[in-house]
Image (tube, rainbow, N blue to C red; front, side):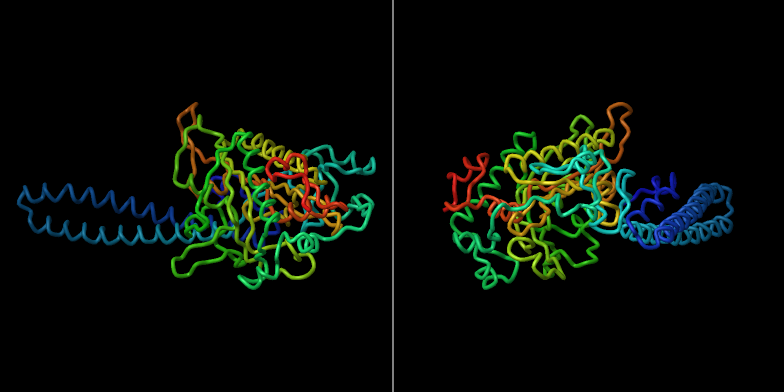
Length: 452
């Protein structure tokens, strides 16, 4: 949630940044927030004046009684009664203005950083780095790392994409061939988007989970095992609520939500908490099942593991100071990249444009791996810096060492990694005549070199 200080200090800049995210009526929404703040201030001033007058009159009552001026004292008591009623009314006005203002702020997205490119949709995202790919010199020159302008995806020529050297089976056929995943059984038990992993397929899932957690532990992340259902306060804290698109599964009877990512429970550990600066950055990771309704998803692009309602994911979460959050973001990006390198998967890193970013992110990079059988890129991670946006919703703060003042933290998170599309790419890119090769880094966790 944006802070009033952000808006008051740079109203024009905030409106311009929100327009980069294509937020409709940005100026109107900001003006409404400021108007409600003026209403609250006006009610506060009236309340303070009435309180001061009531205190003055209250002090005079005893003096009047001592002087035998009973009628004047009684009149003074009536005045204090009227003032009490006025004060209660002003407090109600303040409360209503604050509630309306907060509701308005909850509907306003985070402002993107200056580094975020202009754009409406995914075609305007920028590829800033690739791995295990051979690109033309002109493309390689444009991608010098995450600080480069990068290549606009609409300009990403087909000849830049890796091509399979021979016919490849898609992962849903490989899953059937090697009895790894039963999609039909998942439909029988739950419905579409809930696959059943069997035998070596289940073992591959477990191997990836353990590999990702092991790497996170080596990188200094503390493992958390959180609940997979959260209350509404947690959903509001990280920005999943208000849920305009109905993407979260809701348990009506208990008013609980199935988590779409471990970001929600793990970040909410620090809701209403004041940390010491010496504790930062905090690094947490968590493996959970994740649940997303994915309303309106149909067609070939969601076949097999490409889009699921339930899936496994390892999430990394950081709580940091504003001064260090950029360094934290870069460290998280390097960590995710190292996982893909160890899995020997072709990948690219995208900086998302304003129109394709999430509601809460200030800066986001997506990692995509290349599926040789489907000959398309599959998103496997979004790694974001939220600046103070989530922290303001959460009241997640820290006490600065220098001056002992309390300030809002920065929050960051990323997938490290989501399993379904990683599994799809591993199966499709490593199929051989003798079976499916397991990357060397994963073999100790899987317990074999091949799926046969």
